[in-house]
Length: 464
Ligand SMILES: Cc1cc2nc3c(=O)[nH]c(=O)nc-3n(C[C@H](O)[C@H](O)[C@H](O)COP(=O)(O)OP(=O)(O)OC[C@H]3O[C@@H](n4cnc5c(N)ncnc54)[C@H](O)[C@@H]3O)c2cc1C
Figure 1 (tube, rainbow, N blue to C red):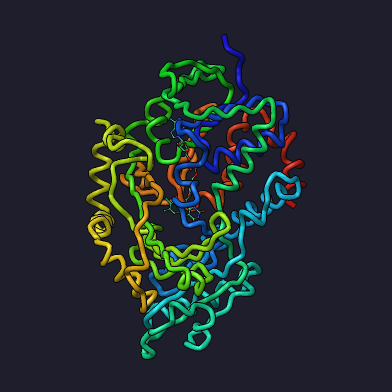
Figure 2: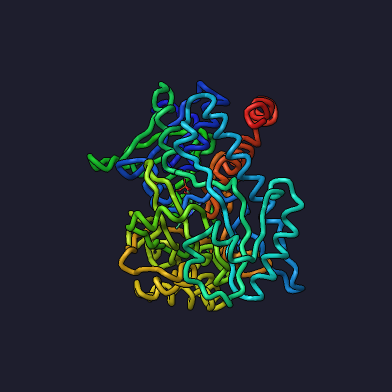
């Protein structure tokens, strides 16, 4: 038999990579294999052009602070995400100290702004501000409804705006723009220098079998079109949208309990440098549709490979692919006799979401520009192009309380002995990747007390 690998990580996105570096720090002698089906690393959601690069810290995303039926604002999710994001920042700072990460080339300081229009939205934003400002990470948040002030914060958004409009914004200066694919690349560059870390590109994991005390991974070498088997003690499935397919194939989940709902996305990108120069903030607007995080449009300044860009979106598009470079048959492959009922129930019970997605999918470029006009009144359509962004697969779960719960966050799945873990769902994955990886470690190694006995104290020092 081939030598037993300590852990196999499937996929080379930011989640698998965070797990890989943590394991290497904690157990430097363990043999780690990472298998990636594409010719390069981090080409799916983690790719810099496929996500918005927002360091989600709860500062500007209005979908994290929903309005309750009594008109109060629930800020618990914003506080939680802030804490999770802070763990990522602490870990990335540690990697920078260890010269693994060039922090200043992957994380940029940029104001995070929430901008709203209309009486109800302004009242909501003011309530949200008054609640959040009492908490330390939000102490420096500023609020204004004055045109003169907002002109300074967001000149493009205020230029040409009707002065009779009721508008307001909050601003936190220490928000971040993050190049998640560069973080992934730098960490993997470091790991690839180690003798016991092996990254295999153009290798697709096609199946997984439980052999009681270990797992057999079936891997296809895409160049030479042959399949081989690698035995391993632990596995993490970090295949982004395609995770569901592998879990179904490997019989890890009950097929009637889960189904997937793919949504792809597009951004508008500005190609006029004189306009790009005038905007330096991530500006999140009101939630258009309470159902999905991608229904919060935002106008983002970004730094990509040292150059400034301006993007607006994302726009949701109905799709049947589970990955951007996936197959149009992905969704159909995930439909089984056991989960058809689940999908139909979810569709009927979330008809607003289906309608919203259909509407977004059918929007022409000029309708998308019209939506942008709401944020940027003087928009010149000729300055903007549409680009394709990443793919998400929302998870439909059969729960005891509700037959068809749609999950917009992520859910960790594990085998009964905890030696296999996987993540279904996405948002706000990349910003909270370190906390997610830490949680995975706790779950995976629950049975042998590695975490409690050997790693806990070491991690405390790293995450000080
Ligand atoms: C439009 C959009 C905007 C977003 N904006 C933000 C944001 O602003 N901030 C934020 O924090 N997060 C954001 N996200 C979410 C974030 O991008 C993802 O949560 C994160 O990148 C997921 O990383 P991952 O490692 O799980 O998956 P991925 O990056 O998708 O990686 C999965 C990898 O697995 C590989 N793979 C799949 N199947 C196999 C197989 N069978 N064998 C081998 N390899 C396989 C794929 O090729 C891929 O490389 C956004 C996502 C989208 C789509």
